[in-house]
Length: 382
Image 1 (cartoon, rainbow, N blue to C red):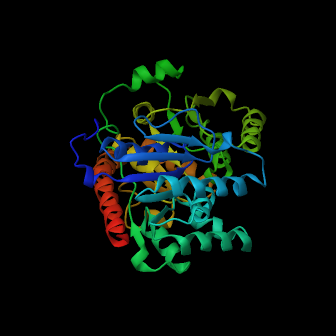
Image 2: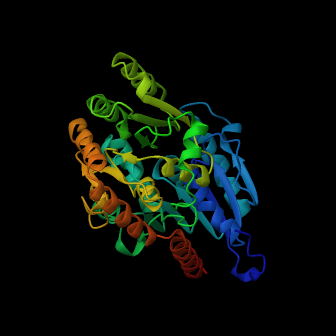
Image 3: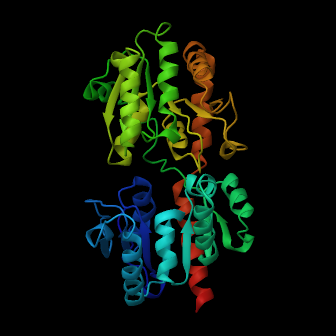
């Protein structure tokens, strides 16, 4: 999408984002505001060689220092001076830990924070100190955006006032995540997958939260019934210790021939191709803030098996839009896979209903909503 260069100067916002610039969700949030003609500045607290095209500036804080235990103190002092010079209309931190802490140290307003999921659902329960830091970020912020009703409820439990809380679903880029083109066969060949195999795609991060070990246990239960089964795992931002554990489990169970490791995808288009080539997408984390992966898969016409989490209540109906399984239940996960494969009527229903549900979650609605919130905060300040 080309930038709206005709936007009047008075309507252009100067926005500074504090983010993990290596995370695809950060980029997906920022790019549309660049494309709409706003002046966007990006500050990353995680090393990333890739910058956002069209951004007015990009700063990698790890080039200043990356020494554990002292880096945030150094970064905080740097970010305070940087923001005072930049004077953006909006300072927006993505995720409460890390970016949120830096936003507090910047001591600048309007300050917007976006919670993604575990930063609001899991982080407060790690320790009293973590909860204290999180509450500090929430108190300092002028607005907290959350992607789901379940996360809004979690924010209220942390005493975030309703007038500072905005429900902003992430949305799905339905022009990209769609059943067309019919490129599943070619994608499988390019990835070295058997074209006629039963391919289960697990696109989530290789980390304990996402229960890859449960998927491995489910596959062990399924291979007798489905000898051609292939579990496709994506090497996306792996937790090194957990990755080693998963590789050991695969070897110990003799599942090497049934597990394929795919490279991390660097674009929405390449991710959409993975969804389209899969027979079923499995997303079974212990916690979820919105469920972008699930909605993207459904938009591509691929059935999804998900954990029965509060975030999907009122959004996805078990047996209609997807199949839901308990957290960490390998047996129920395996049963759900078998149901989808064996019941063709169920399969067709999940495809049709899932696509209809995802079609109503356009990302363009989210962009319009956030831009409106930004302008409201700027007007309030002035």
